[in-house]
Image 1 (cartoon, rainbow, N blue to C red):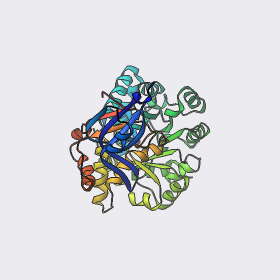
Image 2 (image 1 turned 120 degrees about the horizontal axis):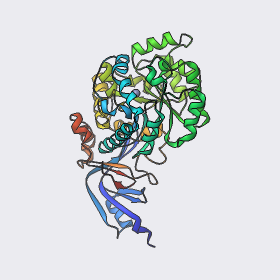
Image 3 (image 1 turned 180 degrees about the vertical axis):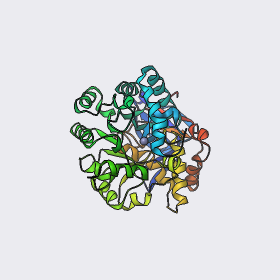
Image 4 (image 1 turned 135 degrees about the horizontal axis):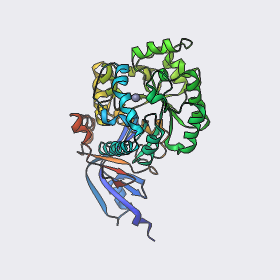
Length: 413
Ligand SMILES: [Zn+2]
């Protein structure tokens, strides 16, 4: 059998993120795909010589890797952007009553389908998400998955309504039986945040994640009020970060959302533990008009990637996240570049969740998960073109991609 029969050639502009300072752009390129994987990318003339008799699919625009969203709450997709204000009020008045509804499995299934469909429409193919406390809803999100997601049921033991805590699997045997029952490559241990758990619960989460080599996701220092509350709840800890660190919860497989209100010793601790930060600029802006100090992340060489944090984030579109990322940091006089924006919304997120060997950019051997954007700029217009992709209303940005491909197959959102 002729093996070239299984090869598809996509001709378009190709934009490939390499690191935070570097991307590679080929204005007229071909991405050769076989059995869902990229086998080669390069200038059209060169690739076409290697595969002369294969039909070329010409795409009108530029392809780039599909986005990775390092922190979101799929169960809040329906209420994203409904409110801005104080975190703790927002949780109590909007989010927890909404998440309560996910005990209903037919609602959960309908919402999971809508979440994946909207994510793919917006060009997001991969990510890390919180579920509600309900194991049933979490399993539904795993079984309905389109793209490559890692999801965990939120663990909540205290300081929350009984209608949530009574369904939480924070106890050792409960959490272990959930972990035994799911595919570990798509599951993250998910303590909601320090105020919802006692030290004993956090220790259980850390132990189970570490013994099973699972990702662990939680929140850290999103607001000043939260930091004050954690100080009251955990007087023995030196600071918020130390609440997690003293029980061994921080490591290279830990993803911490926000990290807006940290002091210098906390940044040093995160760097030492090689923990990942999910930076959620649109969410921080929506809830507090606050800004995560990007210059501190850079100063202490802490690893990070971008995230929507829906529902606090007003949109699941990573183009919207990028719009706010550029605007917020530039308004504070902090330099950000288009190259960094692309890398932090694609490959960096893949690295954070351990998928960079199989996805995140156009290296041969990786999954052909990509998104088509309008326009095929000249080399000297590239950075401006990328910025222009991020200009517009939320509705425009959520629908800007012209198409999304998973494993070389164009998907119907
Ligand atoms: Zn969150």
